[in-house]
Image (tube, rainbow, N blue to C red; front, top):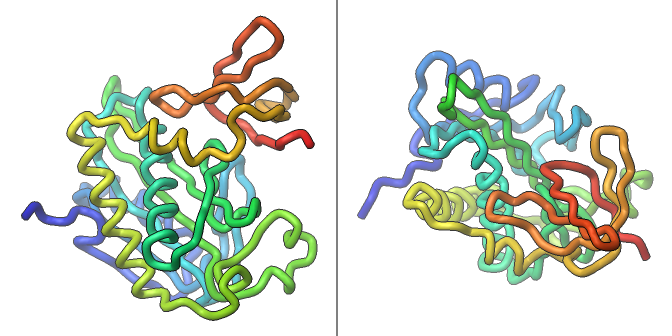
Length: 247
């Protein structure tokens, strides 16, 4: 049986500025892939587009993982698909929930964000030197304490009505991630599984991309996770952006 890569070395901290920053330091010093750095509290946690991501201490899964995948730099976004699927499968198998995905990097429960994923890459020449995979899953607290976020975000405790064992959830997530990573490293595509879980396909959406607002129909995603936006008789390929479903 092959050795599990994800979590073969785990460093745990009480309080850090950012787990992603610690993993980057380790990567630059030559650390092997599979390192996981987890923290009870992050003082400068961040999400996509430089947003702050702060949750109550000791309540959630906050970790960053070092990967050195055999992928070309233009395929690095496949790791976001992998991580989103791993979170979704973990919530299904461990907690019998029915998550959906929001392009490009969110996991939803009842239409609200419960998990965000952030990747940061280092490219040397034409080579993907390493990727930092950051995962933030809201677990044992309530969004009632954050009324400004409650319409858009949720926690596992809010959905289930009880607290979840964090250590068990972490083990399950690392196991799921490892299995999917092996498939990617073997040249498999996860796009069909990713596509099947996207809640927005076929719907009218608004996308904020580099300060520009685009509207159209979310038609599809390609093998590397780019969103295909249909606008009348044209199609636009988007690599990133904030999506809102138009109701």
